Amino acid sequence: MITMVQTGIQATGNMPSGIGSSYRSLADDVYKTTTIEENKFSVIETMKRAFSLAGPQTRRSDPLILRAQCEPRVVAAVGVAVRDRKMPASAAAEETALLGTMPSDSMDDIELKNIQLQFPTARTLSRDDSSVFEERVETGKGSVLVAVQGNRSKPAILTYHDLGLNYISSFQAFFNYIDMRALLENFCVYHVNAPGQEEGAPALPDDYVYPTMDEMAEQISFVMSHFVLKNVIGFGVGAGANVLARFALTHPEKVEALCLINCVSTQAGWIEWGYQKLNARHLRNKGMTQAVLDYLMWHHFGRGTEDRNHDLVQVYKTYFERHVNPTNLALFIDSYVRRTDLNIVRELEPSKRKNSNTLNMPVMNITGALSPHVEDTVTLNGRLDPTNSTWMKLQDCGMVLEEQPGKVSESFRLFLQGQGYAVKLSRKRSTSTSAEVAPLTENKMAIFRQTSLDGLNLTSKHQTRISSPQHWSASAINITENPISEAVVC
Image 1: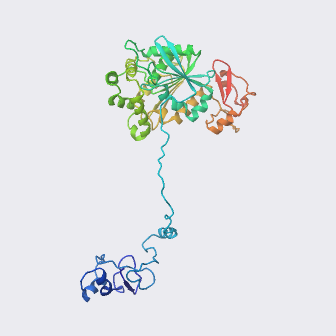
Image 2: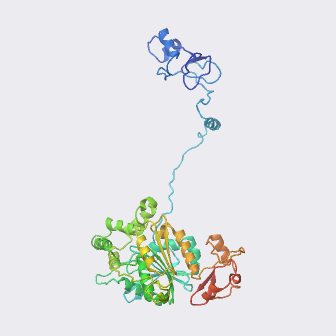
Image 3: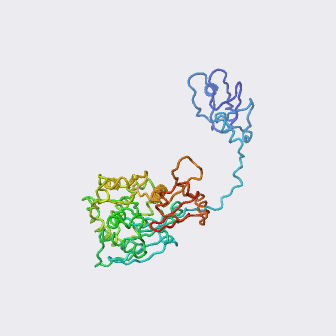
């Protein structure tokens, strides 16, 4: 232990300088016996090192001198532990107060016995929904797998997936989203899979001629006949959106409305044709190569996906590598790259719009700001009738159903309301005569379910649109099936 005598002033964090600062080092008593071996200090050298009389202050390189902070006193002798120590004066006041209240032995009674890692539930793209029933439907170009979700007596929504996906990987997560589950209690969803694209599908025979895009559109007619559907609401993504658009052009009376995501209305350009032909060759000869995998990720998510959602990217990469039949996907890609133009034109003359070659039913055209298909959706929007079409671009996403399911579900709900399917009046009386759409939260949906079905008057879709709001029952969503005059309350 080093001993020091303080005279004149209190010791601070640094060695003081100037007149009035006087320290005397007991070198002969302490240093000689503890630190410095066989070394004699002269009086002059000791005085020079003990006093700082001029010049800038420097840190001592000699053995340290213990500095006291309380009243002038002599600190304990050699070999005795110093106990009543206080916080140094240089510490911040809040740190001193905080550390002063902490007991020195606060961690003495804590013992680490076990370390257990907990991982969040992994996202999987597997057939794990017991509410979905799959059926094989025979068509003129072979059989297709159709998955039915919901009550078949309710209005029908028909979906079609994109390249490299099926109804599970494309729509399962979205239709199980909380808002969609609440809304779709009043609809039945028919998921149509392209030939050979369902999960676990065997390789198609070598002599199998894969249907063209127009022939895949005609397969939807067989599906509707099999399930006795008079009309449907189409919901397609990418290649599936192109198929549904072709079906709507051929059978406009069977399609009540369309929700198209990343839909392409033109034929393939040279760059797309070259990439897709190369991908199809790799899939047939080598399977799922890294080049094909990169193209599929770009096709669905755009660029910079790793920075946005690393976990989602890994899920789909694993899915493409392990759960996609490469031979069947090559046939689907060949059919998609050989697609023809939809040949739809926007008619500016109001008198000629009904006879124009365009989609006459309401269309909601959606894309993501980071999607590589933004320009294609803009082109499609320019060819649609502006009086019954809507173009939407969602920010910060490429694959909108996975990255922005809340915004898509809200848009789709409002879109259905515009068709007379979901109408909700505000419970509070207002001067406005327009109806408001209620957010589909769990609490409000619970209130909707408590509404009695006995007092509800059956109204047709036309009557629902023209009726005055004062005659509608409050706190109810009226789901009106068309053309059958039947209403359902959530």
